[in-house]
Length: 187
Image (cartoon, rainbow, N blue to C red):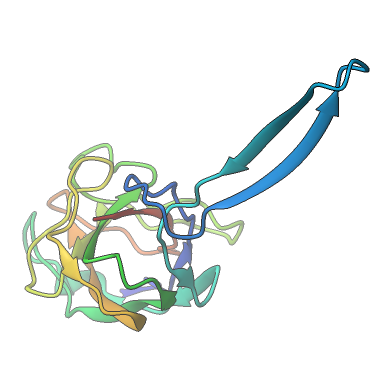
């Protein structure tokens, strides 16, 4: 049987950076008089955390089309499909970032991203999506931060990979789409 393990749709969500610095500080000044010649000066402002701009807000990754027979046992995996998170305009005070991925967990293996019904007929089962860092180390969904990715001032590209992993002895054919989010934690 042919398995329609079609595509994984990544909807990227940008989290709040954990590092606050003085770069990008803004302030406004207001003078307030009390009518007796005394003047108070009130300052207000905000401090913007050093950060980067994410080049795209969402992307679609086609992992591939596979046969159910490709998954001989629980834990069988497909080849990886690389994807990048592209960052622009990173400030010079950022030294690196860790990435946390979130989404629905697979019911049989809670380190994997669960498949979600994309509205097409027939959803695959017995399979989840594994997230890998640049060193092919598994990043558990909703649990594990990636290792620190060093950043330079300007533009950066963070490399990750995705692959299907069987969670049951038998994989059933169908659509294999999922949605995943990520948060960036700057250091």
